[in-house]
Image (cartoon, rainbow, N blue to C red; front, side, top):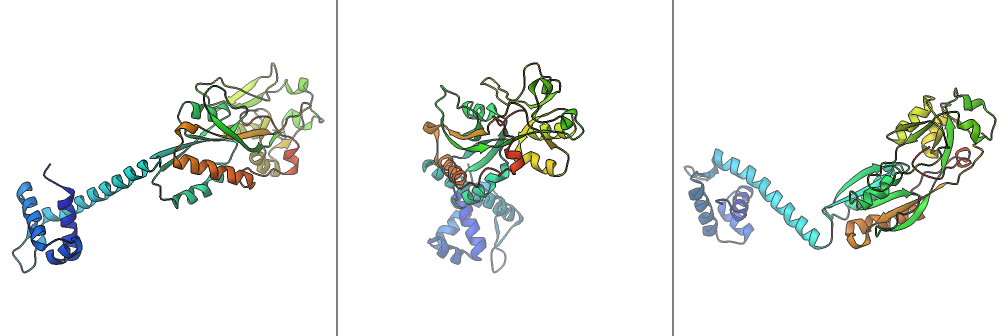
Length: 317
């Protein structure tokens, strides 16, 4: 290879300093060493980099192109050097965080701003999953950290976990749905006459699960909790939704809170990680998520009406 980083650094310094002599001072080298480097580069490339016909050597068109592209190569080389050093210090090149849809993703954005101050150089990627899919992403190594993973921790996969809170759910129907006018508490036999809207479990490896669907009840399966919310507002079915998500629609009169005969507790939410594979970025986020949860800043607060109707899981109707 005819180009070297040393030659490109020399060229950059000459252009920035304005002369060979000042560039030599900046690089702590003698001017003759810079002249030799430039002459050799011109010889190796077979092009003139500087026009020396005047009192002051100036870059030729080829020299200007070499400088501009060379500076980009220098930036990339410096970036690579920093990244290699970070990896050696335990910082991951990329950290993927799987977040269950029951937790608003923007609750984690302040942590990302804090992490930027670490200057770790780790690329952060968020993915959203539903119910068991959050655990599944961790098990399948599609994610390094699982946040708001609901239900029981899958056994046999070497996953570490900690409960960080609970998610409140509310049972809601559209105001024009037949169940809206039915007296509370709603008998299960009555509920089974109407279709439930279910957000599909996004698991790939572990068995998918559902909750809140009664035996012999017809279901409409949708891909996300947002789609589930929209389907219930449209009156296409009934079921539980995260309270924070349903509350604006309840306040606007587009959904009505109902009370099933069989009540359910709120859903436990966990943070999960693979301890043997955890790097510095993963550990940093894990500790900060736990701290935010302990300070009650992570999970949305539910209105009293919604709290009275909480579901057992974060995934489905």
